[in-house]
Length: 356
Image 1 (tube, rainbow, N blue to C red):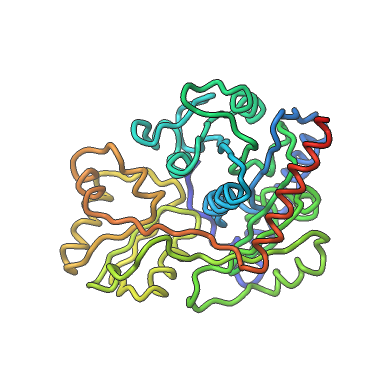
Image 2: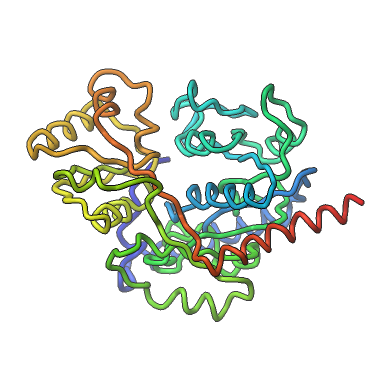
């Protein structure tokens, strides 16, 4: 279900609503633990790198998945993405065709992933991993490993390396489990599942502060590597400074996108935030087009949002045509890129030893 996150999740002080819902969150956390305890994960024949996050909403999983795919390629290895296809109707296994598939069928994130590497959508992660390993797709070559976009809280498929990305500005909010807070499961339980944490520090040049020293506590409490990354543009951005822009985004944290535009020097005269994975309506398109005309501004959005508009008709098709997407990437700090590469090489080495 697509929804706006409740305001109390990231409130600066404890909320009575959050405290009232805390028992429900505690029950949910217990159910997650039991599901893991009762499930024997399937082991894929290929190494699996899982990228997840501790909280509901966006932290930068998909940009991190793309960055790791590039890092894997730099090591002389090939990979395929495995996605649940959130927001789409296809249950899979289905290899995504970025030219023909639509977000309503496969989800918006798989379309972005498929533009970079072979991408398979499957609700059953174990079945999806088998489909990738057995090469059940014409035209897709054999790969060396699987990168699973999301799935930290899914026990069905065994992982060889699990990475969690954390929003370095918002952290984990009030620290409660849904619905009392943004955590998908108790933090201590989730930390036991991951091998390394990547802190998304947001766009370079944006004014931001770390929330309640969460990153510092993470470095103290988590035994594994804590790496850092920044949001950077993936192409030239001079076009953002030509004139005013109206920005719209239906992602986990729209304010991060708006902050990125401002940090890049854009004159943002209008901002429209929508829930994550928002399915734009004709009325939404009309309002955005009118706002841009009123201000004499260009329309700017995220790659994910523009992907959801592809194949539309009427005002939505016009919005797709006029809106320009800002390509971004989550670039690891130079000192941490080598550390992550070493973790990946370690996974390949361990799998190779077991195969002999």
